[in-house]
Length: 305
Image 1: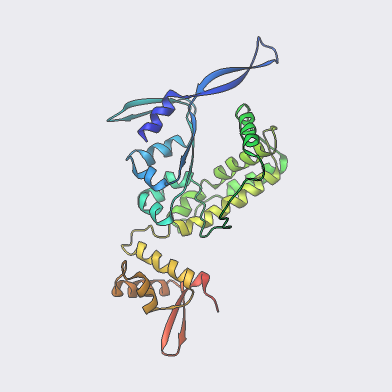
Image 2: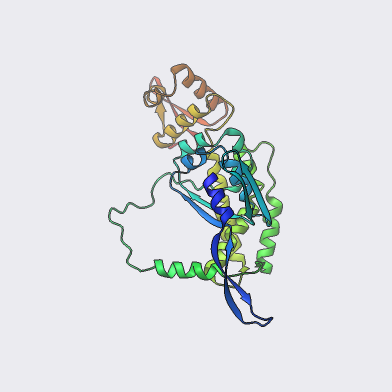
């Protein structure tokens, strides 16, 4: 994280359009800006590499105008001018929940991040090829987008959608930690996505009704995924073990107690499994059925008749 802060404080070359001699003529000038996109194929490694990672990312995410100051014992103080930081990372679900402390799940970091859950690959392509030379075209589009300046506006239809969505983003006191924190910021995440969708269509800097509706739908998908992503995070010492049992039942369907223990004996004792089964059953999250003299259990949301 210290390396990222140092690079941002130095800035990156950037072409800026500006008017010449008070006329409408546009010229390009070279300047510096503290904007960057971090790509991390192993997000859990990046987050845990420094004790400053989560706190710094949380602050930088807001992209506030002005000078952002951050000091470390080893590297000293960094002054970053109007930072704008994005992060695109991947991680296994189990490693992600281990790398983010429980108190951060309900805090500022997870509220600012869109966690997209993929339980399986949509396609398996052994020999992927690109039949269209799209890379130069995409690079040119991004270059043109980077030169745009100004404020986004909403069409009348999009304004109505935004107002209704903004008023609905009120967390309930009984929501799960991650869901409650993200719920309060759903309108912000949807607006940012709507801006991206607008830019993908053209240079008008106008968010229309379709842009914001699509953004809301995708934000709701992320909100629902959070319940699964951080299911193993909690104050109970059996939270992680419970998640392993739930994931097994989601894939297996109905299973006997002995089957559950057979596949999870390295992580759960027989007594702990009994406590987990009773807890989930009392919470109404398990479905039971009798097969002869045996009892089988299934996760409520994935139980098959």
